Image (cartoon, rainbow, N blue to C red):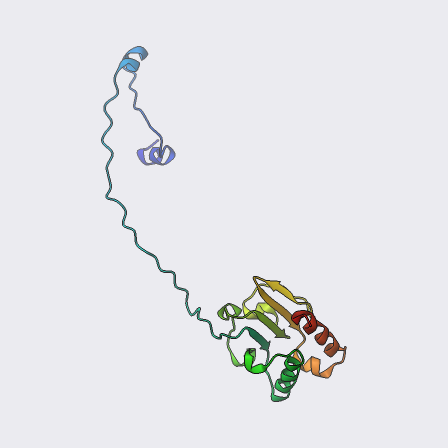
Length: 174
């Protein structure tokens, strides 16, 4: 076994080099050589580490975030009526349009307490929360609601307006 391998295998162990030239009793009676003084290192320098994360700035101070995809003027009017039905105003909400941004992360909106997504999955928003349509969910004191997109709600082919109204009543406790 070479010296480097022995150093690796027996790291942290005390190793004695015993020569067997004499009898075992003579070797055991010999006094070991005084150990070398341990090398003292200067005390470590404490450096304060400041954690910064790139562009984690609250993009809005509004508590309500509405997520849409490609919002037209007709859909914006419908969205306004929907929010007025639960006594919410679009001026008090942040509207995130996926079509107008390259990537949207919900983690950038730290002040948000209510997030309603109209047809946009949470995975598209860099969020790993699994939501079921028209069922609200709360995680870390933020309420989430996923509903169909505004075009589908406006068409109302499968009674989406009734489902939306029931979900919003549960979401806002009306």
